[in-house]
Image (cartoon, rainbow, N blue to C red; front, side, top):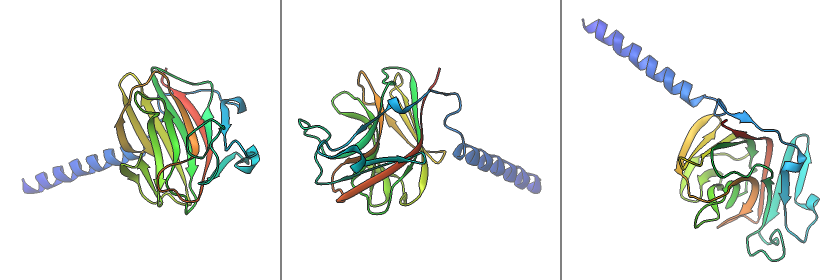
Length: 216
């Protein structure tokens, strides 16, 4: 009898462990449709007094963006901080379930910067910011969601369910954070580098494999 109970316990533990591993390695894009993107969908924003190629490059499928803390904003009348970002054009949304996917890379030393955001909210500019501080990935500046992201490629999937006011953040296929929506009538995705508090002088991120997906 005792051996049967032990065996049953081992089987249950194995099943739970298998389910946990399966959930960690799930594909966040399952059930979504990837939407077509071409160069017209990638609007680059960079310091207005520079040439684009002084802050942005696109080579071998990799979009590299960098900025300095003493750079100008992206247009003369803006009072925002320095940035070099890609703004996804053509897929602004106000309802439904949408997803951003991309592979990001942050070199050592880059800190105090937003590398990805969901723009649009009520009473705020954004519904989501992914920031890096001292090599860790944060939800805004509130909470570490992934440690040690420097000098490696990592897969980013952000799912925004507008109607349910929910966001799910996956890194390398693992669900690492869930957040509430922040309202807003229209949203779009951005990635790159946008200076925040306590920033390093030089900030850089690289992106490849960017996709926009929608649950139909």
